[in-house]
Image 1 (cartoon, rainbow, N blue to C red):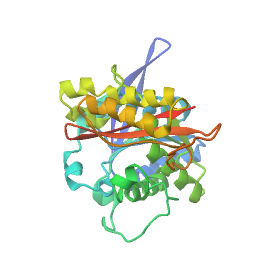
Image 2: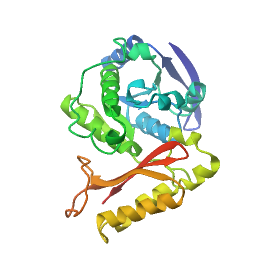
Image 3: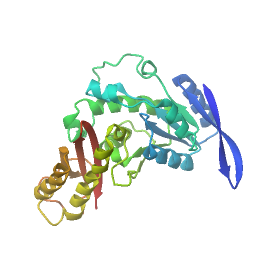
Image 4: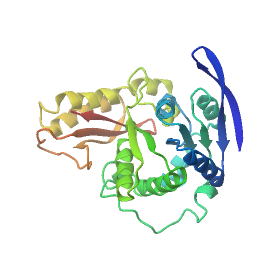
Length: 300
């Protein structure tokens, strides 16, 4: 365990604070127990590192709304259905620490794979995800959400948070986690925060750093396509709207893996008619020069 000091400016007075960095689940449990005895509210932001402003906005909100802000950095191998994707995932430990020092995070939890999977990575256990793992991301990334469920169960049991902070960019993952909290009867409140975007509208993602400057500039078309759907879904047949949106992405030189309008609660696709007052979400996955990008927009 180590603690890195920093200065926090409060009413023009510099107050020394500490960011505690731990690797052991046992050390984390000790901190949790100490804070529970003081009846302090606990907030948790799970990440896979390579932190960007989207992550940091979650951390800042967590720090404002709870009395102990815990951030985890762990690249979870069981949610990568493609081993090559796992190998390419960016790891920037020093940079992550430096960025967290600009926030009011209290604890950075950085466990090893052995810490999180002492029983090994292989398991035959299947968690009932209510069909949320069979559509969109689940259809193209088999096993992905089972891996998400496994790691979230471990992290939630370790941190025991009052509030869990996640970004809307990973809408389907948020839906899965909300389902897990319900079936596990956990009192943790899920706080879903708006997607942070780059100037051109591209959703912030750790994967963006793998894009060339030219591709990154053009990738703003993903948001444009989503908002075309949002602004026109009630004017034209669903499939026609989606085809026009796919064309926008294709004309930018990218490949659409899926682009769907779905029920915002159960993520079942809406193929034809849309019921009045039905809450919807439009989700997309795009391949841009070998990098897979996801995004979504809620439709009122």
